[in-house]
Length: 241
Ligand SMILES: Nc1ncnc2c1ncn2[C@@H]1O[C@H](COP(=O)(O)OP(=O)(O)OP(=O)(O)O)[C@@H](O)[C@H]1O
Image 1 (cartoon, rainbow, N blue to C red):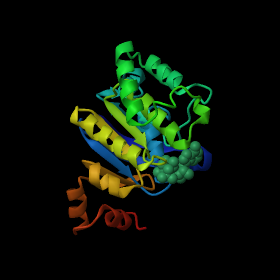
Image 2 (spheres, rainbow, N blue to C red):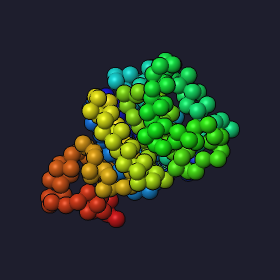
Image 3 (cartoon, helix red, strand yellow):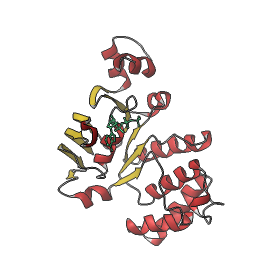
């Protein structure tokens, strides 16, 4: 579903090689966790996957579509939730959702059904008519989550989605991720919450200084570590923290 080959990015400003020749693939129906210390290259990778940033080298394919060759086909498959929910503050929640649904050409019936479902799930029904300006950080995060789910994406890409969510919303989001995978969708997300990654991910990649230093199922990561260890212990060992 998601194929990354030899992906590389150096920022002109500062000359930092943020992503250094990484390759991995995510199968359809998987939940894939992307872990790494601060500044490891997670957001840069995610921005290249979603087409917000152009790579210096390498390829990203989504359902076979190369993001540089067929950007619209590739992007139409993705639902993206950035780490910093920047939404149109002067729109009401429901206006923002309709805008997102328009962009992705979601039918009236589908948008009504999905909006009702996710607004209820994320406890946003009462606030949907208010300006986003008045929302808390967590509420903004949840309206962006809802907007990203309206077109029923094949690939759900989330950058540190648990930040700012209350326990119930975080639980519900994990349920959404699991349900999506049950329906044959694919989830790719970065997180610093290792317990969540350990519990819900089918496979995990750990990136450090722009390079993937460990990748696989929890069993495979444990086998590489040579011991029965928690993801936290493995993470600390491989990143030399
Ligand atoms: N716009 C930019 N210009 C210059 N350097 C950048 C830019 N964005 C990121 N970097 C650098 O690229 C490297 C990777 O940053 P990135 O944001 O991808 O890391 P991250 O793994 O998402 O970190 P965090 O966990 O702190 O969010 C860092 O050294 C960072 O300073």
